[in-house]
Image (cartoon, rainbow, N blue to C red; front, side):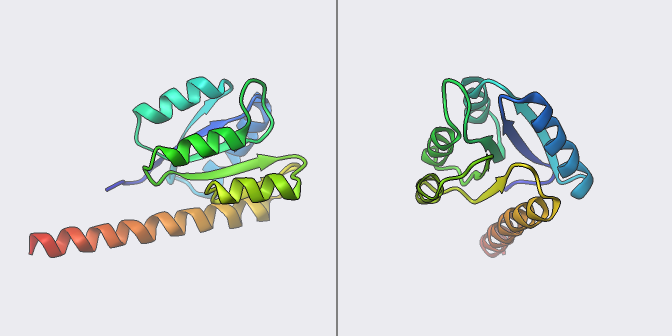
Amino acid sequence: MFNKPYLMVMVDDQEDLSDILSEYLEDMCPGAFTIQSFHDPEKALEFIENNPVRIVVTDVRMPRMNGDQINLRVKQMGRGIKTVIITGNMSYTKAVTCYNDGADGFIQKPFNPKEIRTTFQRVLDCMESWEEVFRKIAQSRAG
């Protein structure tokens, strides 16, 4: 079972954009997230593999590894990690690929505060609903 703050990994080769989004999320949902930012996708994946990460936010276009590749690798870990893809120019094909690979949401650049709020509220609601299911199962086994 996971408790707040949820560990979030942000992967973006543009440091300023990940800083802006991190600050907005911390203001929007105080105490909900602990955010670790990475500019190197391989280091981010290593961190994700070795820590109780609950959410991964990744830019789709980066050197050496794309966000859709990160999304797929995270989903293949089978740990229920939620993924949100950031993009400046989402094509229909890329969107379908990411959704088929299990992405839980998208955020377009330039950032729209309403879109960010809606996307992350949906992700939080899903995580909290699963946690409630896990609590009920644990209680029924204990009692």
